[in-house]
Amino acid sequence: MALALYTAFYYLISPFIVLRLLLRSIKAPAYRQRIAERFGFFSSPELEGCIWMHTVSMGETIAAVPLVKQLQQRYPGKAIVMTTMTPTGSERVKALLGDSVFHVYAPYDLPCCLQRFLRRLKPSLLVIMETELWPNTLAACQRRGIATVLVNARLSQKSAAGYQRFAALSKPMLQNLSLVAAQTEADAARFVALGMAADKVAVTGSIKFDISIEPALQQQAQQLKAQCSQQGQRLVWIAASTHKGEDEIMLAAHRQLLAECPDALLILVPRHPERFNAVAQLVQAQGFSSLRRSSGELPNASVQVYVGDTMGEMMLLLGAADIAFVGGSLVASGGHNMLEPAAWGLPVLTGPSDFNFLAISQALMQAQALTKIEHAEGLAAELLRLQQPSERLCQGQAAQQMLAANQGALARLLALLAKFIA
Image (tube, rainbow, N blue to C red; front, side):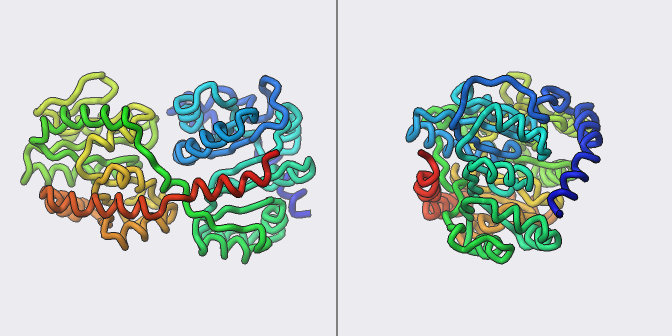
């Protein structure tokens, strides 16, 4: 009954979902493209027996890439279908995996959409990244004998409480999963408390720890850092994946930093591409000497703010910095991946909102590799402290050591998935 009511409600609101896409497309035109795919209308090659990998957006897609590449190496005869929900996730699939996978937007969680999707692709396994669970999708896979595995799974107390409020719908949904590979023991315990059988829950750790920086990227970052830092003569810090409301704080902190360290450079990278122009205009309006990454020029000694308004270059821009602030954490968004700057050996700064990466945040804090700040003054003070190379080296090395100590989740996950791949 709960699933039937949910489905009826979803059908009723589906016109408003499309309207929301069209409204979002005013700022991000990609949202109005390929809408038919979301209803299961698309053409594809013959992919029967494929592995269906679902990620939501850019962050989950990037985290899934090492897993996808390992699956391709181990099972070269298995086609892989990648689905996302957002244009930024779609762009990352194309940029990082190209034609080695078949990409299409995920179908809406409606029986008619799912029927068209599954009838065309006929997957044998669905691998879902992190938290993206849909009742009809899992029910449809269960009916067709398609194994479903939730990997890199995390479940906060807040999310668990939300599932519990709708237990009549969420409990059968979770029981349709073949396996949950949780990031932590706490995540695993919450899934079991919600109705998952304990023997269907395993703790693998987070595959986000399994970061490797390719030599070509290291060399490219070294060259960019030499230019940005004027051969090491100026301090470079990056504000990565900032959200609306955070850019003003970053600029205020940078202004305070410039009063003591007048040659410092801020690399300011908004999280969402539809904000690139607005952030660049904000920087100019506040009187900073600025340059946009998309211009193709490199910053000279007079540039105070370098706006990262390109897609797919976050790891490169992190590699050009001395210190990293990770955004989405001074607003109630739960933060973003702090392990990417840790992989570069950077001191990591973040705000108090980190519920999306709580275990990672706690591990970095315990290693004394992460500092939390709450306002521009606190951020400026930390940046001034980290002017000293010895301070940066100590905190950056601690970050890299913590990262190395927690790697191995990818290998454990691949061993579990092998049980479901014929």
